[in-house]
Figure (spheres, rainbow, N blue to C red):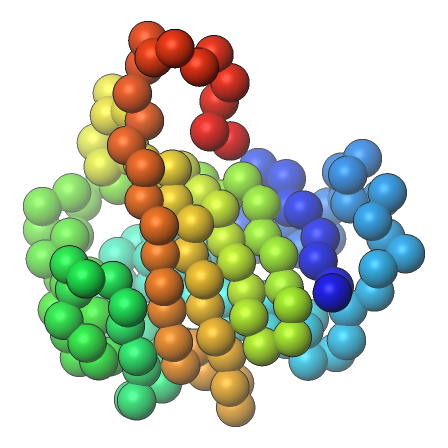
Length: 156
């Protein structure tokens, strides 16, 4: 299994920065295909999810996109509609990537979504399957961030 933790930095810079954890795992190499899959997903975050720009989705997402999020209709066009809706509702939302992992054709991204200033937001893990240079399938898990709970550990 090839994987590497990504530090919290702007998305474009994440692939090139090494943390102590990634240096420790540096003996685990990625294949060229895994590098491409990881970069595709990080580029999609930078150009589609962070700006909530549905017009850029076609460059990254397959026309036959399979969506497993039960709150979103299936398909690429439905994803674009969702992005347009989200941008209208929360135009200043942020997606702070904490780490990303790649294993073959799957990429996992763990990040913090904040919908507006002062929002505690969600801890999110997205799982993407990549084929032929496109994201073809997506699963996600969301957790509300609740301050003052019994666990002092951050979800990140």
